[in-house]
Image 1: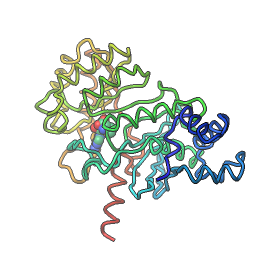
Image 2: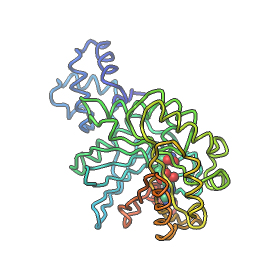
Image 3: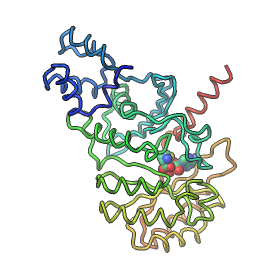
Length: 346
Ligand code: SAH
């Protein structure tokens, strides 16, 4: 098996090139090509032909194939379904905001976490993505769309903290000045609440935004919709959030999918306020995206507005997530699922 070159840091590439007698600057040239989306060594025209052939014999370059590309007529949001080299598919969504273009990327093929409202987890985990495959979603979306990407959210298919080492390496790669050069402050990582991994992340003291998918005011509700809560009950999760804040001084962003009659009463918002006391937090209220296979329904607009007001009155900022790409199944897991189902039928 040839080695996956794009998963290497520049320093590692320099060492690997030194070991085969190539000068350091060659590694940098290759690194720059890869991070600009070169799909083969032949594209690297500032390298000699013999060197290109030699590298091709040693290393593999990942380059996902676009199997579906949908663009919203309403807001320009683009959804990509990528086929990876082993035939598995993952999704990314490229969104335009006032502050720049933001891409939501997947961290795994499928997901092991089993949240009851989520389409990504219906078939379980297939495999974790390599650092290069995480990076490719950013590189090739930018290359294909011609839109410069300045923000990344790890909120697509999968649980990023279940793929911890590869995600950490991806962050280092996408942050490198010779590559995409995207600052940590422009990156958000979303987790369903793997407490030991949150503690491990805290130790790294990265300036990224940690988003925690809370979705419930207490264990009684959370146990019903998020199996992870059995392993790490909400009290432990909130304690980890407090430790994270102490270590990084970064305010936690809580995601809260509003589900009709399940977690959307004013008492639920009040309970949250009591439990979060003293922890600087922001709430992202997301009206549930209805998934065909699930009986759960989105909250009414009035319930969302009332919930938001209760949080705000209690001193916790809360925004209602603007839904983008509603006409293209832009929420995570839906496109991959449809594609896999249509393949099974054939
Ligand atoms: N595994 C990570 C990141 C992926 S999901 C996590 O759990 O945070 C990104 C966000 O979308 C999570 O907050 C997730 O709970 C939420 N989500 C999943 N399905 C949803 C749906 N049908 N409607 C609204 N939000 C959903």
